[in-house]
Image (cartoon, rainbow, N blue to C red; front, top):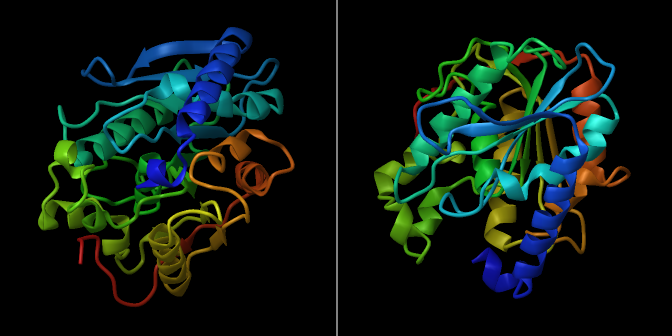
Length: 288
């Protein structure tokens, strides 16, 4: 799927690993904080120096829900921490040991853990921007639906979300080899597809940004555009970009590159005073 479109993808994985290793050695923070009972339910929290409280960026990694780890994503933290923003990189269990809905729920536990204060230093627990790449983009899109049944979060915990190259309709994965470890059926795929949900009337609608490479799979770009249109029609603020010349594996790197659209969009959401809108019209928190 995505890897076939970019044959040199292992080079990107290695670059992420090296830059992330350098970041962990450089930045102050807490590594491998447990937020749940599974050994993989840990997160790395990077804190800025000389700042008592500011916004928090949370990042969920990609890997088709069956690969990678938080240790490949530390690189996104450095430019934000250097500008006074705390960053948490979430690890989680992988398929086939767990199912996709368990991974989404694990990220919810991580955010709940962070919102509880986590040593009460370095960030404001109610000013959290959720972000993620690929499978993590699917996860972050669910945080726009703050009443998703798998979450146990106080309303307003997350005040904006950034979905990077998100997979929004998992039914498309069922006939592919990726599903061998995911074990999705049509029913369970719909349950974990953000595009299948609509917010209940009156539910808070947080700003939601979609950024995918212009050279992504056409299906992924179609899903992104469809979800962005739906979110805007429901009354939510939507940002939707597909930078030309970027693909699935280099677009996420621009989250750590000041001046790039993805970084600047995320930064603006972190530092703004956000007004949350309420959903209008008909809606439901159940999948369609």
